Image (cartoon, rainbow, N blue to C red; front, side, top):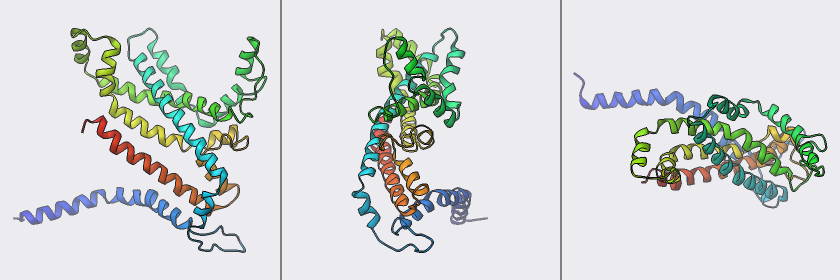
Length: 296
């Protein structure tokens, strides 16, 4: 008969064998690319006739003096601060609406979720038509009321906000699904108890419903923040970062340096900065925010 020590030993070995495939895949597709980017960012741009040369932190010093990088980073922060709270708020509102027993609920659900299932390129082309000067949907509506034509995507003051509106329209339906699933898991006895206590609709939502939805909100928030830093395809179709980098975002700037300018070393440096920003945001979300959500 095996001793207690042997059982613990083999259970330990079996546990590691079970998680080894997952650890291998995470290391191969997550940690190795991050390490390779950090290593590659310490070299100069290589060409056919001139190989890469170790330059240390030279790429990072150049980044600190890069005006385009700071402009793109500012654009991305504005983009994130607009899209994340707006898409979450709208998603919660839509979920609360379709969770009720309203007429035509299935049709309303389908209409809210339809933008999510559309391909990104199709969405970009649809909104490109909406924003087309003179012939686009928005200018046609404004012309009907006597307004003037506006170059929505060609104006530096409006190009970024046009992208923000489009992304909110597409992402709100996706986040709505998670809120709807969470709402349907809430016990109806809580609602009955609230009615017995005489609480109104807004008070019940603020004191009962919304606190119980906070774990879902954290999950949605993490996804929304990540999505706000990975927009590329819409930019390629609609603005290509213009005019004058007014709508360029950080990941698109990385793509531009890597595949348009072929400066892979500087693109790796920008990628390291992007990963660092996302890591800081994630740490804040899973330390400060999560503790408040679960009342720890």
